[in-house]
Length: 286
Length: 289
Image (cartoon, rainbow over all chains, first blue to last red; front, side, top):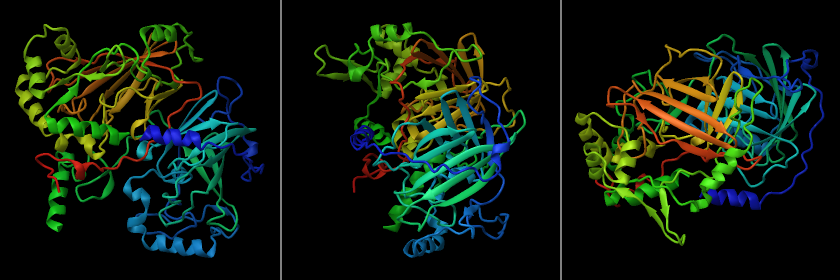
Protein backbone atom coordinates (compact mmCIF):
# COMPACT_ATOMS: atom_id res chain seq x y z
CA UNK A 1 0.00 0.00 0.00
CA UNK A 2 2.75 2.37 0.94
CA UNK A 3 4.63 1.42 -2.17
CA UNK A 4 1.58 2.15 -4.23
CA UNK A 5 1.18 5.49 -2.59
CA UNK A 6 4.76 6.36 -3.27
CA UNK A 7 4.39 5.41 -6.89
CA UNK A 8 1.29 7.56 -7.16
CA UNK A 9 3.15 10.44 -5.66
CA UNK A 10 5.94 10.16 -8.12
CA UNK A 11 3.57 9.92 -11.02
CA UNK A 12 1.71 13.03 -9.94
CA UNK A 13 4.83 15.01 -9.30
CA UNK A 14 4.54 18.35 -10.97
CA UNK A 15 6.88 21.23 -11.07
CA UNK A 16 5.50 24.20 -9.31
CA UNK A 17 7.38 27.42 -9.10
CA UNK A 18 7.87 28.20 -5.44
CA UNK A 19 7.56 31.91 -5.08
CA UNK A 20 8.47 33.39 -1.78
CA UNK A 21 7.23 36.60 -0.40
CA UNK A 22 10.41 38.54 0.18
CA UNK A 23 9.03 40.29 3.17
CA UNK A 24 11.36 41.55 5.80
CA UNK A 25 11.15 40.13 9.29
CA UNK A 26 9.10 42.56 11.30
CA UNK A 27 10.24 41.65 14.76
CA UNK A 28 13.59 43.37 14.75
CA UNK A 29 15.37 40.06 14.19
CA UNK A 30 18.00 41.53 11.93
CA UNK A 31 19.89 43.01 14.85
CA UNK A 32 21.03 39.70 16.32
CA UNK A 33 23.60 37.58 14.53
CA UNK A 34 23.35 33.91 15.51
CA UNK A 35 26.40 31.68 15.83
CA UNK A 36 27.53 29.55 12.91
CA UNK A 37 27.82 25.86 12.34
CA UNK A 38 31.27 24.42 11.73
CA UNK A 39 31.08 25.34 8.07
CA UNK A 40 31.30 28.95 9.33
CA UNK A 41 28.37 29.85 7.10
CA UNK A 42 25.09 28.29 8.23
CA UNK A 43 23.31 30.02 11.13
CA UNK A 44 23.22 27.70 14.14
CA UNK A 45 19.66 27.22 15.39
CA UNK A 46 20.39 23.98 17.23
CA UNK A 47 18.79 23.53 20.60
CA UNK A 48 15.58 22.69 22.38
CA UNK A 49 12.94 25.37 22.00
CA UNK A 50 9.50 25.95 23.41
CA UNK A 51 6.81 28.62 23.39
CA UNK A 52 5.69 29.96 26.74
CA UNK A 53 2.17 31.06 25.94
CA UNK A 54 -1.08 29.16 25.54
CA UNK A 55 -1.94 30.26 22.02
CA UNK A 56 -2.45 26.59 21.21
CA UNK A 57 -5.90 26.91 22.76
CA UNK A 58 -6.92 29.60 20.28
CA UNK A 59 -4.49 31.46 18.08
CA UNK A 60 -6.98 34.34 17.91
CA UNK A 61 -6.58 34.77 21.65
CA UNK A 62 -8.63 33.46 24.51
CA UNK A 63 -9.51 34.19 28.10
CA UNK A 64 -8.22 32.05 30.90
CA UNK A 65 -9.83 28.82 32.01
CA UNK A 66 -9.20 26.37 34.79
CA UNK A 67 -5.51 25.54 34.64
CA UNK A 68 -4.96 27.48 31.42
CA UNK A 69 -3.54 30.97 31.32
CA UNK A 70 -5.15 33.48 28.95
CA UNK A 71 -3.31 34.39 25.78
CA UNK A 72 -3.57 37.19 23.30
CA UNK A 73 -3.86 36.61 19.59
CA UNK A 74 -0.61 35.63 17.89
CA UNK A 75 -1.99 36.88 14.58
CA UNK A 76 -0.05 39.98 13.59
CA UNK A 77 -1.63 40.45 10.20
CA UNK A 78 -4.45 41.42 9.83
CA UNK A 79 -3.99 43.90 12.65
CA UNK A 80 -7.27 43.00 14.34
CA UNK A 81 -5.82 39.59 15.23
CA UNK A 82 -8.60 37.65 13.55
CA UNK A 83 -8.34 35.04 10.84
CA UNK A 84 -9.85 36.48 7.61
CA UNK A 85 -12.24 33.61 6.93
CA UNK A 86 -14.65 33.70 4.04
CA UNK A 87 -18.25 33.70 5.34
CA UNK A 88 -18.82 30.01 4.52
CA UNK A 89 -15.52 29.02 6.04
CA UNK A 90 -16.31 30.96 9.19
CA UNK A 91 -19.51 28.96 9.58
CA UNK A 92 -17.49 25.74 9.43
CA UNK A 93 -15.02 27.09 11.95
CA UNK A 94 -17.89 27.86 14.34
CA UNK A 95 -19.18 24.33 13.82
CA UNK A 96 -15.69 23.01 14.62
CA UNK A 97 -15.60 25.20 17.71
CA UNK A 98 -18.86 23.77 18.95
CA UNK A 99 -17.59 20.21 18.46
CA UNK A 100 -14.07 20.84 19.71
CA UNK A 101 -14.23 18.52 22.74
CA UNK A 102 -14.42 15.55 20.37
CA UNK A 103 -13.54 16.83 16.92
CA UNK A 104 -10.05 18.16 17.58
CA UNK A 105 -7.79 15.75 15.66
CA UNK A 106 -5.02 16.07 18.22
CA UNK A 107 -7.36 14.45 20.74
CA UNK A 108 -7.18 11.37 18.56
CA UNK A 109 -3.40 11.30 18.75
CA UNK A 110 -2.82 12.67 15.28
CA UNK A 111 0.24 14.77 14.77
CA UNK A 112 -0.37 18.46 15.22
CA UNK A 113 0.90 19.43 11.80
CA UNK A 114 2.27 22.72 10.56
CA UNK A 115 2.27 25.32 12.02
CA UNK A 116 0.45 24.00 15.09
CA UNK A 117 3.26 21.73 16.27
CA UNK A 118 5.44 24.80 16.78
CA UNK A 119 3.25 26.45 19.40
CA UNK A 120 1.59 23.35 20.80
CA UNK A 121 3.21 24.00 24.15
CA UNK A 122 5.70 21.15 24.25
CA UNK A 123 9.31 21.55 23.16
CA UNK A 124 10.93 20.86 19.83
CA UNK A 125 14.56 20.17 19.04
CA UNK A 126 16.43 21.46 16.02
CA UNK A 127 19.14 19.14 14.72
CA UNK A 128 21.44 20.69 12.16
CA UNK A 129 24.51 19.93 10.21
CA UNK A 130 25.68 21.78 7.12
CA UNK A 131 23.06 21.00 4.49
CA UNK A 132 20.64 19.29 6.89
CA UNK A 133 17.89 20.87 8.96
CA UNK A 134 15.55 18.67 10.98
CA UNK A 135 13.01 19.49 13.64
CA UNK A 136 11.93 16.78 16.06
CA UNK A 137 8.84 17.66 18.06
CA UNK A 138 8.29 16.19 21.49
CA UNK A 139 4.58 15.84 20.90
CA UNK A 140 3.96 12.47 19.28
CA UNK A 141 7.69 12.26 18.41
CA UNK A 142 6.88 13.95 15.10
CA UNK A 143 9.67 15.15 12.86
CA UNK A 144 10.15 17.28 9.78
CA UNK A 145 12.98 17.15 7.31
CA UNK A 146 13.53 20.47 5.58
CA UNK A 147 14.29 19.84 1.92
CA UNK A 148 16.67 22.37 0.49
CA UNK A 149 15.42 24.21 -2.54
CA UNK A 150 15.25 24.14 -5.44
CA UNK A 151 12.95 21.21 -5.51
CA UNK A 152 9.31 21.60 -6.35
CA UNK A 153 6.57 20.57 -3.98
CA UNK A 154 5.06 17.14 -4.39
CA UNK A 155 1.42 17.28 -5.28
CA UNK A 156 -1.29 14.82 -4.43
CA UNK A 157 0.03 14.06 -0.97
CA UNK A 158 -1.73 14.96 2.22
CA UNK A 159 0.73 14.69 5.05
CA UNK A 160 0.28 15.75 8.64
CA UNK A 161 3.66 17.46 8.71
CA UNK A 162 3.54 18.51 5.06
CA UNK A 163 6.33 18.89 2.55
CA UNK A 164 8.84 21.53 3.60
CA UNK A 165 11.30 23.37 1.34
CA UNK A 166 13.63 26.00 2.69
CA UNK A 167 16.30 28.49 1.93
CA UNK A 168 18.21 31.09 3.90
CA UNK A 169 17.58 34.80 3.55
CA UNK A 170 20.53 36.14 5.46
CA UNK A 171 20.17 34.70 8.94
CA UNK A 172 16.48 33.89 8.49
CA UNK A 173 15.37 30.41 7.51
CA UNK A 174 12.45 30.73 5.11
CA UNK A 175 10.25 27.77 4.26
CA UNK A 176 7.47 26.91 1.91
CA UNK A 177 5.19 24.18 3.25
CA UNK A 178 2.63 22.41 1.14
CA UNK A 179 0.93 19.00 0.86
CA UNK A 180 -0.70 19.38 4.27
CA UNK A 181 -3.76 17.34 5.12
CA UNK A 182 -7.02 19.17 5.76
CA UNK A 183 -7.73 16.84 8.68
CA UNK A 184 -5.57 18.91 10.98
CA UNK A 185 -6.51 22.04 12.88
CA UNK A 186 -4.55 25.14 13.76
CA UNK A 187 -5.45 25.07 17.45
CA UNK A 188 -7.92 23.59 19.91
CA UNK A 189 -10.65 25.97 18.82
CA UNK A 190 -11.40 24.58 15.40
CA UNK A 191 -9.46 27.04 13.26
CA UNK A 192 -8.63 25.16 10.11
CA UNK A 193 -7.45 25.16 6.51
CA UNK A 194 -8.01 23.09 3.37
CA UNK A 195 -5.68 20.89 1.31
CA UNK A 196 -4.87 23.96 -0.79
CA UNK A 197 -3.12 25.62 2.12
CA UNK A 198 0.33 27.05 1.61
CA UNK A 199 2.34 27.97 4.69
CA UNK A 200 5.43 30.14 4.51
CA UNK A 201 7.46 30.11 7.67
CA UNK A 202 10.29 32.34 8.83
CA UNK A 203 12.61 31.31 11.64
CA UNK A 204 15.08 33.82 12.95
CA UNK A 205 16.92 34.30 16.20
CA UNK A 206 16.24 37.56 17.98
CA UNK A 207 18.69 36.84 20.79
CA UNK A 208 20.93 34.02 22.00
CA UNK A 209 17.97 32.21 23.54
CA UNK A 210 14.98 33.37 21.52
CA UNK A 211 13.83 32.04 18.19
CA UNK A 212 11.12 34.04 16.47
CA UNK A 213 8.64 32.06 14.43
CA UNK A 214 6.46 33.59 11.80
CA UNK A 215 4.04 31.79 9.51
CA UNK A 216 2.01 33.26 6.68
CA UNK A 217 -0.95 31.10 5.82
CA UNK A 218 -2.59 31.29 2.44
CA UNK A 219 -5.62 29.32 1.37
CA UNK A 220 -8.07 30.91 -1.06
CA UNK A 221 -10.61 28.19 -0.30
CA UNK A 222 -10.90 29.28 3.31
CA UNK A 223 -9.46 32.76 3.76
CA UNK A 224 -10.15 36.01 1.95
CA UNK A 225 -6.44 36.95 2.18
CA UNK A 226 -3.16 35.55 3.48
CA UNK A 227 -2.58 36.12 7.17
CA UNK A 228 0.39 35.87 9.51
CA UNK A 229 1.09 34.59 12.99
CA UNK A 230 4.17 35.37 15.02
CA UNK A 231 5.38 33.83 18.24
CA UNK A 232 8.62 33.38 20.13
CA UNK A 233 10.28 30.13 21.12
CA UNK A 234 12.57 30.15 24.13
CA UNK A 235 15.65 28.01 24.50
CA UNK A 236 15.43 25.28 27.13
CA UNK A 237 18.73 25.59 28.91
CA UNK A 238 20.44 23.37 31.39
CA UNK A 239 22.55 20.27 30.91
CA UNK A 240 19.63 17.93 31.43
CA UNK A 241 17.31 19.54 28.89
CA UNK A 242 15.91 16.95 26.55
CA UNK A 243 12.80 15.86 24.73
CA UNK A 244 10.82 13.35 26.72
CA UNK A 245 9.10 10.38 25.15
CA UNK A 246 5.52 11.21 24.38
CA UNK A 247 3.20 8.46 23.26
CA UNK A 248 -0.41 9.25 22.59
CA UNK A 249 -2.41 6.05 22.69
CA UNK A 250 -5.96 4.86 22.90
CA UNK A 251 -7.22 3.61 26.22
CA UNK A 252 -9.71 0.90 27.02
CA UNK A 253 -12.65 3.20 26.47
CA UNK A 254 -11.49 4.26 23.07
CA UNK A 255 -10.31 7.59 24.42
CA UNK A 256 -6.95 8.77 23.17
CA UNK A 257 -4.60 10.34 25.60
CA UNK A 258 -1.00 10.98 26.27
CA UNK A 259 0.06 8.04 28.35
CA UNK A 260 2.40 8.52 31.21
CA UNK A 261 3.74 5.11 32.14
CA UNK A 262 4.56 6.38 35.61
CA UNK A 263 0.95 7.23 36.30
CA UNK A 264 -0.84 4.10 37.52
CA UNK A 265 -4.17 5.54 36.46
CA UNK A 266 -2.90 5.67 32.90
CA UNK A 267 -0.89 2.53 32.73
CA UNK A 268 -3.16 -0.45 32.92
CA UNK A 269 -1.75 -3.76 33.84
CA UNK A 270 -1.27 -5.45 30.52
CA UNK A 271 -2.26 -2.35 28.71
CA UNK A 272 -3.29 -4.00 25.50
CA UNK A 273 -5.65 -6.43 27.16
CA UNK A 274 -8.16 -3.62 27.17
CA UNK A 275 -9.13 -4.67 23.69
CA UNK A 276 -10.76 -7.72 25.07
CA UNK A 277 -12.83 -5.39 27.22
CA UNK A 278 -13.56 -3.20 24.23
CA UNK A 279 -14.72 -6.24 22.30
CA UNK A 280 -17.02 -7.26 25.09
CA UNK A 281 -18.41 -3.75 25.32
CA UNK A 282 -19.13 -3.61 21.63
CA UNK A 283 -20.81 -7.02 21.74
CA UNK A 284 -23.02 -5.87 24.60
CA UNK A 285 -24.01 -2.85 22.58
CA UNK A 286 -25.22 -5.12 19.82
CA UNK B 1 2.79 -0.55 5.85
CA UNK B 2 1.62 -1.61 9.23
CA UNK B 3 -1.44 -3.08 7.63
CA UNK B 4 0.76 -5.26 5.48
CA UNK B 5 2.62 -6.48 8.48
CA UNK B 6 -0.56 -7.50 10.14
CA UNK B 7 -1.97 -9.09 7.04
CA UNK B 8 1.03 -11.34 6.94
CA UNK B 9 0.54 -12.30 10.56
CA UNK B 10 -3.08 -12.86 9.76
CA UNK B 11 -2.16 -15.58 7.34
CA UNK B 12 0.29 -17.24 9.62
CA UNK B 13 -1.36 -17.20 12.96
CA UNK B 14 -4.60 -18.97 12.19
CA UNK B 15 -2.43 -21.79 10.95
CA UNK B 16 -0.78 -21.94 14.32
CA UNK B 17 2.54 -21.04 12.80
CA UNK B 18 4.92 -18.26 13.34
CA UNK B 19 8.42 -17.10 13.02
CA UNK B 20 10.07 -16.32 9.76
CA UNK B 21 13.37 -18.02 10.17
CA UNK B 22 16.68 -16.46 9.34
CA UNK B 23 18.11 -17.65 6.05
CA UNK B 24 20.57 -15.83 3.90
CA UNK B 25 18.96 -15.00 0.64
CA UNK B 26 21.23 -15.46 -2.29
CA UNK B 27 21.06 -11.89 -3.19
CA UNK B 28 18.29 -11.09 -5.57
CA UNK B 29 15.32 -10.75 -3.24
CA UNK B 30 13.73 -7.34 -3.71
CA UNK B 31 17.02 -5.96 -4.84
CA UNK B 32 18.82 -7.01 -1.70
CA UNK B 33 22.49 -6.28 -2.23
CA UNK B 34 24.85 -9.10 -2.93
CA UNK B 35 27.95 -9.50 -0.84
CA UNK B 36 29.82 -7.89 -3.70
CA UNK B 37 27.51 -4.90 -3.59
CA UNK B 38 27.99 -4.58 0.14
CA UNK B 39 31.72 -4.82 -0.33
CA UNK B 40 31.54 -2.10 -2.94
CA UNK B 41 29.49 0.16 -0.65
CA UNK B 42 31.95 -0.52 2.14
CA UNK B 43 34.86 0.47 -0.05
CA UNK B 44 33.54 4.00 -0.43
CA UNK B 45 35.25 6.55 1.80
CA UNK B 46 33.72 6.96 5.26
CA UNK B 47 32.74 10.60 5.68
CA UNK B 48 33.79 12.19 8.96
CA UNK B 49 32.09 14.90 10.93
CA UNK B 50 33.95 17.99 12.08
CA UNK B 51 34.70 16.35 15.42
CA UNK B 52 36.48 13.45 13.69
CA UNK B 53 33.81 10.82 14.32
CA UNK B 54 32.29 8.99 11.37
CA UNK B 55 29.26 10.88 10.10
CA UNK B 56 26.30 8.54 10.36
CA UNK B 57 24.02 11.03 8.62
CA UNK B 58 22.18 9.39 5.79
CA UNK B 59 19.20 7.44 4.58
CA UNK B 60 19.89 3.87 5.63
CA UNK B 61 16.80 2.38 4.08
CA UNK B 62 18.73 1.13 1.11
CA UNK B 63 18.32 -2.48 0.07
CA UNK B 64 19.22 -4.52 3.04
CA UNK B 65 21.08 -7.79 3.35
CA UNK B 66 18.87 -9.00 6.13
CA UNK B 67 18.20 -12.41 4.71
CA UNK B 68 15.06 -13.78 6.27
CA UNK B 69 13.91 -15.32 3.05
CA UNK B 70 15.30 -17.91 0.68
CA UNK B 71 14.92 -17.30 -3.03
CA UNK B 72 15.09 -20.19 -5.44
CA UNK B 73 17.78 -20.17 -8.07
CA UNK B 74 15.33 -19.36 -10.84
CA UNK B 75 14.00 -16.50 -8.69
CA UNK B 76 10.44 -17.72 -9.00
CA UNK B 77 9.79 -19.00 -5.51
CA UNK B 78 10.46 -17.45 -2.16
CA UNK B 79 10.73 -19.74 0.82
CA UNK B 80 9.91 -18.57 4.31
CA UNK B 81 11.31 -20.70 7.05
CA UNK B 82 8.45 -21.27 9.42
CA UNK B 83 8.69 -22.91 12.80
CA UNK B 84 5.95 -23.84 15.21
CA UNK B 85 6.04 -22.38 18.72
CA UNK B 86 6.57 -25.86 20.01
CA UNK B 87 9.58 -26.18 17.78
CA UNK B 88 11.02 -22.92 19.05
CA UNK B 89 10.72 -24.01 22.65
CA UNK B 90 12.26 -27.32 21.75
CA UNK B 91 15.15 -25.56 20.11
CA UNK B 92 15.76 -23.62 23.25
CA UNK B 93 15.78 -26.79 25.29
CA UNK B 94 17.98 -28.76 22.93
CA UNK B 95 21.41 -27.96 21.76
CA UNK B 96 21.31 -26.96 18.12
CA UNK B 97 23.17 -29.39 15.94
CA UNK B 98 21.84 -28.51 12.58
CA UNK B 99 22.79 -25.30 10.92
CA UNK B 100 19.29 -23.86 11.24
CA UNK B 101 19.08 -24.60 14.92
CA UNK B 102 22.46 -23.13 15.60
CA UNK B 103 21.50 -19.97 13.82
CA UNK B 104 18.23 -19.74 15.62
CA UNK B 105 19.85 -20.35 18.95
CA UNK B 106 22.19 -17.52 18.17
CA UNK B 107 19.39 -15.13 17.38
CA UNK B 108 16.78 -15.92 20.00
CA UNK B 109 16.82 -14.74 23.60
CA UNK B 110 17.33 -17.42 26.21
CA UNK B 111 14.63 -17.23 28.82
CA UNK B 112 14.65 -18.76 32.24
CA UNK B 113 13.08 -22.22 31.92
CA UNK B 114 10.21 -21.39 34.26
CA UNK B 115 9.14 -18.57 31.94
CA UNK B 116 8.86 -20.64 28.77
CA UNK B 117 5.28 -21.52 29.59
CA UNK B 118 4.32 -17.89 29.89
CA UNK B 119 6.02 -17.13 26.59
CA UNK B 120 4.13 -19.94 24.93
CA UNK B 121 0.86 -18.63 26.31
CA UNK B 122 1.62 -15.11 25.11
CA UNK B 123 2.66 -16.49 21.78
CA UNK B 124 -0.39 -18.67 21.36
CA UNK B 125 -2.54 -15.64 22.08
CA UNK B 126 -0.48 -13.26 20.01
CA UNK B 127 -3.45 -11.79 18.20
CA UNK B 128 -4.73 -10.70 21.57
CA UNK B 129 -1.51 -10.05 23.40
CA UNK B 130 0.90 -8.58 20.87
CA UNK B 131 0.99 -4.88 21.74
CA UNK B 132 1.70 -3.69 18.21
CA UNK B 133 -1.55 -5.16 16.96
CA UNK B 134 -3.17 -2.21 18.67
CA UNK B 135 -0.76 0.38 17.31
CA UNK B 136 1.23 0.35 20.53
CA UNK B 137 4.89 1.35 20.15
CA UNK B 138 7.28 -1.44 19.18
CA UNK B 139 9.92 -0.38 21.65
CA UNK B 140 13.47 -1.68 21.55
CA UNK B 141 14.91 -3.77 20.02
CA UNK B 142 11.79 -4.74 18.11
CA UNK B 143 11.62 -1.54 16.10
CA UNK B 144 14.90 -2.50 14.44
CA UNK B 145 17.48 -0.13 13.02
CA UNK B 146 16.54 3.44 12.09
CA UNK B 147 15.73 4.32 8.52
CA UNK B 148 17.51 7.64 8.58
CA UNK B 149 20.09 9.31 10.81
CA UNK B 150 21.04 12.93 11.34
CA UNK B 151 24.14 13.62 13.33
CA UNK B 152 25.35 16.76 14.97
CA UNK B 153 28.13 16.89 17.58
CA UNK B 154 25.86 17.01 20.62
CA UNK B 155 22.97 14.84 19.47
CA UNK B 156 22.06 12.19 16.94
CA UNK B 157 18.50 11.91 15.62
CA UNK B 158 17.33 8.44 14.66
CA UNK B 159 14.33 8.51 12.33
CA UNK B 160 12.13 5.48 11.79
CA UNK B 161 9.83 5.14 8.80
CA UNK B 162 7.44 3.14 10.95
CA UNK B 163 4.98 5.22 12.98
CA UNK B 164 6.86 8.43 12.16
CA UNK B 165 9.10 7.89 15.13
CA UNK B 166 12.10 10.00 15.99
CA UNK B 167 14.53 9.26 18.82
CA UNK B 168 17.12 11.77 19.89
CA UNK B 169 20.31 10.35 21.37
CA UNK B 170 22.32 12.93 23.30
CA UNK B 171 26.06 12.55 22.69
CA UNK B 172 27.12 15.48 24.84
CA UNK B 173 28.56 13.26 27.55
CA UNK B 174 25.58 13.37 29.86
CA UNK B 175 24.75 10.42 32.11
CA UNK B 176 21.45 8.57 32.25
CA UNK B 177 18.59 10.50 33.76
CA UNK B 178 17.94 8.54 36.94
CA UNK B 179 14.64 10.33 37.41
CA UNK B 180 13.29 9.47 33.96
CA UNK B 181 9.93 7.77 33.90
CA UNK B 182 9.95 4.28 32.41
CA UNK B 183 9.03 4.56 28.76
CA UNK B 184 8.57 2.54 25.58
CA UNK B 185 11.89 3.57 24.09
CA UNK B 186 13.73 4.15 27.34
CA UNK B 187 16.29 6.75 28.33
CA UNK B 188 19.13 6.73 25.83
CA UNK B 189 22.61 8.21 26.02
CA UNK B 190 25.24 7.89 23.34
CA UNK B 191 29.02 7.83 23.39
CA UNK B 192 31.74 7.10 20.88
CA UNK B 193 33.96 4.06 21.28
CA UNK B 194 36.49 4.58 18.54
CA UNK B 195 34.48 4.77 15.33
CA UNK B 196 31.41 3.14 16.82
CA UNK B 197 28.48 5.05 18.28
CA UNK B 198 27.33 3.15 21.35
CA UNK B 199 23.81 3.92 22.54
CA UNK B 200 23.00 2.74 26.02
CA UNK B 201 19.31 2.57 26.86
CA UNK B 202 17.59 1.81 30.15
CA UNK B 203 14.48 2.96 32.08
CA UNK B 204 12.09 1.00 29.88
CA UNK B 205 8.52 0.18 30.77
CA UNK B 206 7.45 -3.45 30.49
CA UNK B 207 4.79 -2.90 27.85
CA UNK B 208 6.65 -4.06 24.75
CA UNK B 209 7.90 -7.31 23.30
CA UNK B 210 11.49 -7.89 22.31
CA UNK B 211 10.58 -9.20 18.87
CA UNK B 212 7.60 -9.81 16.73
CA UNK B 213 5.02 -12.40 17.72
CA UNK B 214 7.14 -14.58 19.94
CA UNK B 215 5.74 -13.52 23.27
CA UNK B 216 9.18 -12.37 24.30
CA UNK B 217 8.16 -10.12 27.14
CA UNK B 218 10.55 -8.27 29.43
CA UNK B 219 10.58 -6.33 32.65
CA UNK B 220 11.58 -2.78 33.51
CA UNK B 221 15.12 -4.06 34.09
CA UNK B 222 15.59 -4.20 30.32
CA UNK B 223 18.91 -2.78 29.18
CA UNK B 224 19.62 -2.38 25.49
CA UNK B 225 22.96 -1.51 23.95
CA UNK B 226 22.94 -0.47 20.31
CA UNK B 227 26.10 -0.06 18.24
CA UNK B 228 26.31 1.86 14.99
CA UNK B 229 29.42 1.47 12.89
CA UNK B 230 29.72 3.17 9.54
CA UNK B 231 32.06 1.72 6.95
CA UNK B 232 31.88 3.50 3.64
CA UNK B 233 28.25 3.51 2.63
CA UNK B 234 27.27 0.68 4.94
CA UNK B 235 26.05 0.87 8.50
CA UNK B 236 26.47 -2.05 10.84
CA UNK B 237 23.79 -2.23 13.50
CA UNK B 238 24.43 -4.45 16.50
CA UNK B 239 22.20 -4.91 19.50
CA UNK B 240 22.69 -6.56 22.87
CA UNK B 241 19.71 -7.03 25.16
CA UNK B 242 19.93 -7.66 28.88
CA UNK B 243 17.17 -8.38 31.34
CA UNK B 244 18.43 -10.48 34.23
CA UNK B 245 14.87 -10.88 35.50
CA UNK B 246 13.86 -13.00 32.53
CA UNK B 247 16.92 -13.87 30.47
CA UNK B 248 19.60 -16.32 31.49
CA UNK B 249 22.24 -14.42 29.55
CA UNK B 250 22.42 -11.30 27.39
CA UNK B 251 20.78 -11.71 24.03
CA UNK B 252 23.05 -10.71 21.16
CA UNK B 253 21.03 -10.15 18.02
CA UNK B 254 22.42 -11.01 14.63
CA UNK B 255 24.14 -7.88 13.35
CA UNK B 256 22.50 -6.20 10.41
CA UNK B 257 24.26 -4.34 7.66
CA UNK B 258 22.34 -1.49 6.11
CA UNK B 259 23.29 0.26 2.94
CA UNK B 260 22.92 3.90 2.03
CA UNK B 261 19.91 4.83 -0.06
CA UNK B 262 19.95 7.12 -3.05
CA UNK B 263 21.23 10.65 -2.62
CA UNK B 264 18.43 13.00 -1.68
CA UNK B 265 16.25 10.18 -0.39
CA UNK B 266 14.47 10.81 2.90
CA UNK B 267 11.82 9.17 5.02
CA UNK B 268 8.34 9.82 3.72
CA UNK B 269 5.61 10.34 6.25
CA UNK B 270 3.81 7.14 7.23
CA UNK B 271 0.03 7.29 7.54
CA UNK B 272 -1.08 7.30 11.18
CA UNK B 273 -1.40 3.81 12.63
CA UNK B 274 -5.03 2.89 12.82
CA UNK B 275 -6.29 -0.37 14.13
CA UNK B 276 -8.32 -1.90 11.33
CA UNK B 277 -7.65 -5.59 11.26
CA UNK B 278 -9.41 -6.39 14.52
CA UNK B 279 -12.72 -7.01 12.81
CA UNK B 280 -11.08 -9.32 10.27
CA UNK B 281 -9.32 -11.57 12.74
CA UNK B 282 -10.72 -15.01 13.18
CA UNK B 283 -9.39 -16.96 16.14
CA UNK B 284 -10.55 -18.01 19.53
CA UNK B 285 -11.06 -14.42 20.65
CA UNK B 286 -12.33 -13.01 17.41
CA UNK B 287 -15.17 -14.89 15.79
CA UNK B 288 -16.22 -14.52 12.23
CA UNK B 289 -19.31 -12.31 12.02
